[in-house]
Image 1 (cartoon, rainbow, N blue to C red):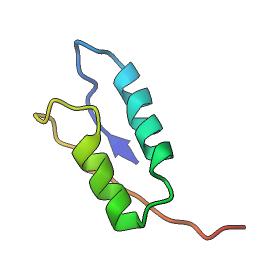
Image 2: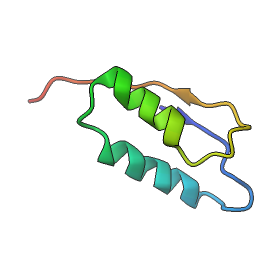
Image 3: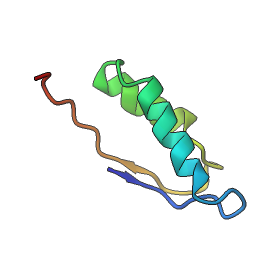
Image 4: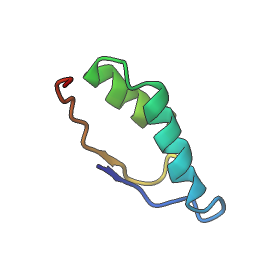
Length: 59
């Protein structure tokens, strides 16, 4: 789950950028993955961010 308020100057495409960041780093260990999203996500640093990340077993 990603809860974020899009940057009003950029619109909702920043959520697409966030999804791309998540996809690019999906192979990281979960703790590193969450830290990467929090540290490098498209934000001006003034909004709150909540990330719920779950690693599911491969089928």
